[in-house]
Length: 479
Image 1 (cartoon, rainbow, N blue to C red):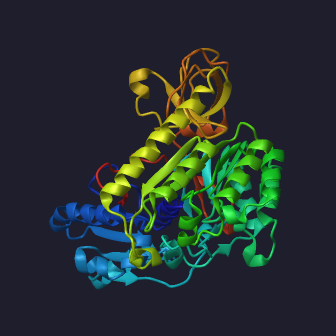
Image 2: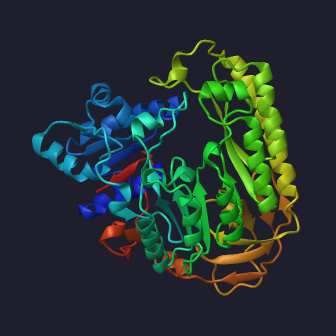
Image 3: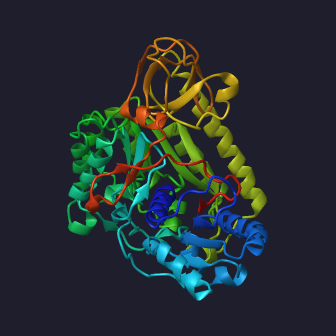
């Protein structure tokens, strides 16, 4: 969601006449922040501190901070870093260009935090990061009250887009060569709650299956409490919906789940996994897990290990519990010592690493279809491989030799046979079995990426080739 919001911010800046800076000497630097874990705070203020000398040397330079951390800290940001020019929240990202101009005109910091959504993000322009894959928001906000999570207080209650608007955006992207979309929501399978349609998400998946030229559909993230059989059926019966599911577990202990205010229990979670595997035997299932939640006992943690062993996740995003001020869990008794959390975390990692490796070894010999991506293989230059994602979301590093129709570009589609399953990826070192050139690959080769003007404002159009992103600040630099 944050990546997609950053695409919106980049689109807004371009519409306001700015261009992406080709180096570190940006006139404007925008930080889009997260507040889920404490290290996000530390990273932001560390980066702001590193920018202060540049700001002192060039007082006309502007620094803006937006996103969840801005929504949380508000005016505290300019108190701690008075060289910041603009602070804006999650509900008014469309205000950024105006706030920058106002700060420039008034020669003082502008802090604007709205308490409710001003404009649904998809009505704003977006400079897409990829020529072949796109994020599509179906909802924003969350109606759950998990005790560890600060997101509902920062993003607000769930707001759903109408299906026609979503499908119009998908069709517009496909018309420009996009092969794959990921439907985004804080809780995608509660989609439709705002307009009272319980089966809205499964119907949306099936409708995406009817869009000619859309080869892959993914979604993130569902909540186990809202997962229904009609969604599983839609996944299995819609050919372009990928055999992949990311479903947060958080804990395998019923007692901890209750304390987290997660309204499902371990048996319910495992039953969904079983149903998905029955309908989609080769589905790759991934998850999120929190270790060291307040009050977690060794028995509770063992419950998590048991569910992980039974679920056999392809991979897991594992986190040590991070206390977030303003959440109920932050004031709970029995906060665990760091050394206890660390030891449990290492045991969980060891178990999941072994499961991931075992499952990837089972892929050896299988033929996989890969959409070639850019920048996902850090060692590709050294190994002379290319990389991309299989339909189930696994990362595949492959040998680009064999049945090749000229140069292979990001966005092209290849098929290859897996020769080795590594712990975190698949290796395909044999010759390619096929290579299909795509419009997305053509666009990548020409340096073009879709720029959507907001789904209600017309179809996407391609702009000028993007220049390289600035390397130092980790934000969105503009000039």
